[in-house]
Each structure stands twice: as C-alpha cells, then as structure tokens.
Image (cartoon, rainbow over all chains, first blue to last red; front, side, top):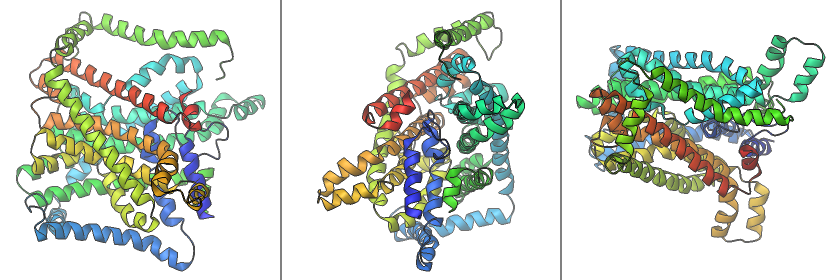
Amino acid sequence: VTRSSREAHATSRREGTAPAAPDTTTPNAPATGEATANAAAPAPAGSRTTGAGGGPGRRTSSWLLPLVGVALALLVFELVPRVGLVDRRFLPPASEMFAALWESFADGSLWLPIGQTLAGWALGLATAMVIALPLGILIGSVSLLFRATRTIVEFLRPVPSVALIPLAVLVFGAGLQSKWFLASFAATFPILLQTLYGVRDVDPIALETARSFGISTPQRLWRVVVPSALPYIVTGVRISSAVALILSVTAELVLGAPGLGQEINIARQSGAVDLMYGLIIVTGLIGWLLNIALSIVERRLLHWHASQRERNR
Amino acid sequence: MRENNRLTRVLGLGLEIAVPIAVLVLWGLLSANSTSFYFPSLLDIFRAFGHAWLFDRVDSDVLPSLSRLFGGYVIAVVAAVVIGVALGSSRTLLRIVDPVVQFMRAIPAPVLLPVGILVLGVGSGMKVALIAFVCVFPVLLNTIDGVAGVDPALRETARSFQIPFRERLFRVVLPSASPQIFAGARVSLSLAVIMMVVSEMVASTNGIGYFVLQSQRTYAIADMWAGIFLLAILGYVLNVLFLLVERRVLRWHRGARAGAS
C-alpha cells in the first residue's frame, strides 16, 4: 500500500497542474515553480519515514537510519577539524560549536535575537497573508481583473526582493520596520499566486451547483471557493514562511537590524567562529521547526483532502 | 471564469497590455514634479538607467555579476543531479542522508555568507562557491524524489531487458525525473539571484548588488532605483529564459504542456 500510494503521490506531484480532478492531485500551483519544489520537499520526507510500515523491523529502521545520519554528520564535523583536514580557525569541531551555543543559551543572551528574528518573520508573514488572501480571492474570482493584473503580477513575482534592501533602509531605517517591509513584500507573492490559481481552479460544476441551489455569494465563497482553494493557499503560506525568514535574516545581516543575522556578523567579526557556526545551526533549526509546524497545521486543515488521507493511511 | 465569449477574450488581452502601460504612465505623471528625495521622478530614473546600464557599467558590474551567478548555478545543478541520482537509487542511503539534507535546506541561505567570507575571503570565488552551495539543495531534494519516484514497472522492465546502466540512466531515470529536477532548478535560480545580490552588497567592490547599495549610501537615489529596476528586469528575464528551456526540454511531458497553456 505504502509503495503504491507513494508512487501516486509522486506522480501527481510531477504532473503539476490539476486539470480534472482536484481531489486526486496534491496541492501545487501550475504557475509557481517555487511551489513544486520548495513546499513539496518536506512532504515526501514524511511519507518516507512514517509511511514505511511493514514489519516491526522496518519501523525501527524508519527512525534509526535518520538518527544514524545525524550522528554521522556530527561525527564528521567533529573529526575533520580535529584530525587537521580543515583549519580549526575556519571550522571548529562540532562539540565546540555546541558548547559556545550552550553558553549563550545559558546566560540568556540568545533569546532576544531569536525573538527579534521571529518578530520579523511573523509580522512579515501575517502582513503578507492579510494582503494576499483577500486580493488573491478577488483577483481569482473576477476574470477580467485577473487579466488586468496578470502582467504586473507576473513581472513583480520574480523580482529578487533583496534588491529592495537599499530602498527599505532609506525609507524605514535599519530596524524592525525594514525587516517587516522586506519580509512582507517577499512573502506576499507566493500566497497571492497560490490563492488566485487555487480560486481559479475551483470546480465550476460545484460552483454552479451551489449557485443553482440559491446559496448566497458570501456562503458560496466560504463553503465552496475557500475550501477547494485551501490546499493551494496552505502551500503558498508554507513557501512564504521560508521566504519571510530568509528576508528577515538577510535584513539583519546586510543592514545590521538587530536579530540572529546581526549576531552572526558580530560573532564573525569578533573571531568567535564557534559561536558563529552555533548561531547558523540555530537559524537552520528555526527554519526546520517552522516548516514542521506548518506541516502540522496543513495536516489539520486538510485532513479531509485526498493527499492527506492517502499519506496517513 | 469561462471565457467562451469572444469579446471577453479580446478585452482580456487588451487589459493585459493596457494596464501595465497605464500604471507606468500614471507613475510617470504622479512623480513628474516629485520633490520627494526617496522617490524621484520616473523620467529621472529612466535617465539614470540609460546612463548606468546602457552600456557604461555592463563591463564593470553586470558581467561580473552574471558570470558569478551562472558559474555557481551550473556547478550546483550538475552536482545536485549527480548526487541526487546516486542517493535516489538506494533507499537505505536516502534515509541516512535525508535529515542532514533537510536541515541544510532549512538554513536561510544568506546566513552562510559570513562563513564564506571567513573561509574564502571576499573574492569572486567565494561568491561562486556560496551560490553553488546554496543552490544544490533544492535541486538535490527534487532529484532524489524524482529518481525514487520512477515508475517501478518501467525500471524493472528496463532492467529485465538488460539495458546497460548508462542507457537506463539517460533514457529511463533522468527523463522521468526531469520534471521534478526542473522544478527544483527553478527554485535554485531565484536563490542564486538572491545570493548574488546579497553577497555583492556585503562583500564586493563591483557587481549590481554593490552598485545598488553604494548608490543608496552615497544618496544617488535615481541610480539606486535604476539598479533596482535592472535587478527586477534580470529576475524577470531569467525566469522567462528558464521557462523557455524547460518547455523545450519537457516538451514531451503532458503536465508541462498543461501548465504552460
């Protein structure tokens, strides 16, 4: 069962667009290339590890092997500098990274920058959702509006948002506001595009049926359009979350806005290489945890959707 | 939603062309007498754009930027496909490596910049290496998925006909994984642009990213806007080029065609 469902999962993902049956395809956008990889990446990991149910032996290996992988990676990063393959000034042993990290956790100096980075991420993502969700639903449901905005949206979407860093510092200075602006700008487009393509992909028969039963427009929106676009929207939010984190940290690195990015810079400049690596590990863990948290939200929201039902089987 | 009406279609096409022009004209008119320091008039920006990029700074800034971008990107895609095919063929190996790759993928790429500066200095080599390193992971993850998801019947058939490994790789495995490889490569492309810009902003003496931030720091605001415009156009053009290549390579693929229409 697992094998074939996984194949189906992968195939539907590869097919990309959802031409006919929206309930057999995994949520992903036709037009946003970013969607396919960025958000799909964690999904197979889940099915790979949890889905491999066979005998009890297989179940053990499903968590044992990844553990072995982590242990091996730590061992390599411990031994390579100790043996002298790489200069310790460039790459200290893993134990020293974690020791430095532990120290700054213990004296409490790490919590503030973590909070500052997360504040940029949260404000950016929330603003993007507030802007992009209504706009996406509106543009997606009005065909002429879609055509009218299409060129502009398609042009703005691939604009590297880091290009706006100088503008942000001019207008907002080197603080939280800059982070907020950059993160919201960057995070708006994935949600906007996913929402509007999700809305345009709503089964017209379902919509017509609802209409002929005399269901009011707001009710139709809430009961038909939003649920059927939800898989797309959730994917968009997940991409945007990663993007918002990247922009938040980048603003800290380039502009010196307070947060983890700035701490990493300071650590490098003051020669605390072990701490620098430790902080980078922290940002990676934050990105990873946010991803997992959003996957859980996705599973909760879409427990009725075919892609999720299949995965949980 | 269904555009069966011919009039609607013509109107739609007209809107697609007219609205962006209207927006530009409106911007031009509204900013024509702009006294705002941060938002100069559109004409000034265009003038600065022509002055800087046609073709004064192409040699000194645009070409170094683009060569770093493509250098790093090509290295990353090739490496990721090779490693991905190797990993995707073994389930055990895959499970062992998976958490590490997932973690690397989750790191917000620009934080690796200080590591690059520390280890490799501030030269072009550092930027190429950094772009390459960062771009590996999206392609790698997707290649692994694509290879692991090759239809087993197809795989077994090829094997039972004793098709040599080389042929199997190029005629069965890679083609059927290619849609996913392309999806990853597209993500990597936008990452590559981000890393190019950021690395030039933080540690460089030339390049488009350097130019933009330097213009802001010297309060050459029209120049800064011109740089932002160039980066926007660059992002757009790269995306279009990528789609062209993808459509050509995946012409046989049903999903790609449906997605393009």
